[in-house]
Length: 334
Image 1 (cartoon, rainbow, N blue to C red):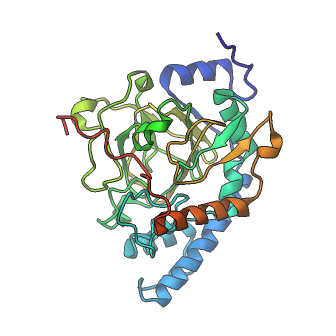
Image 2: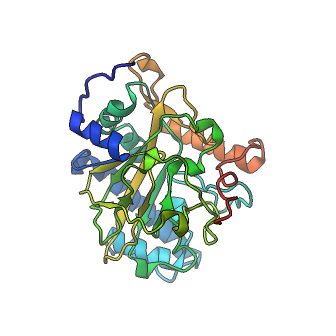
Image 3: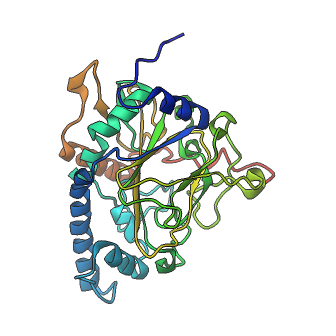
């Protein structure tokens, strides 16, 4: 049997809890000062977008002068697809892609957070020192539920997230990949503002039936009949805290019933050489003790790779599927 190296960041009790439950909430992983660059980057991005949208007559006001969360809520209420321009992934569309809205954000502050040493230390304790940053990543900026337009109220990047396993959106080549999700709280995540909720031990129950989400086709969900009333464990964490979970863990996020913004990133990592399950999009070697020169350290190169992927998808040069939406939703319960 292969022996796990002694953990450098997580305790043996924490590792045992992760293996038992399929999730682990940890506070104080990323210091608040290390979140300041992404807060600044997004404030500048929102300012550019709001100014442009107002100039084009898409919104009634640029809402300049409001604090970031309030400004975001006002702009997205009038321009519901705003979240696509703030996300850190291209939209998960196998068809029907429109160049005007097929966009994402890949700024340097995002890249540096993905490579943050304290995040990678935690990941290393789970999967080992050869760490690949998966392109299966999302920015989730959730305004108060009352601010959401009906068009996007069911979208998990801005509204509540339904029960699911992360494996559901991966292509079959990643079925055996040892993927771990790092859900990073950029603002405090509470029960009131929509923290994660997870079913302890569900990662040992195998793949669940997922049915098509009629509101958001690219977000299959475990139906209520399969969940059978299971409620799960809420996982609140402070700003800079993380929740780790296994790709087979069943989880959801509650609606934001607070008066402010709930902001998080979900990042995924797996051992170098294993499949990401999303070959259309680019990942990178975030840490390698065996081959440090293979690590990507240039945020511009990362952004260029995403721009090239966008061009390949829109031009038709990439002809495969971007995400999985077919093999999970043919059960009778659906």
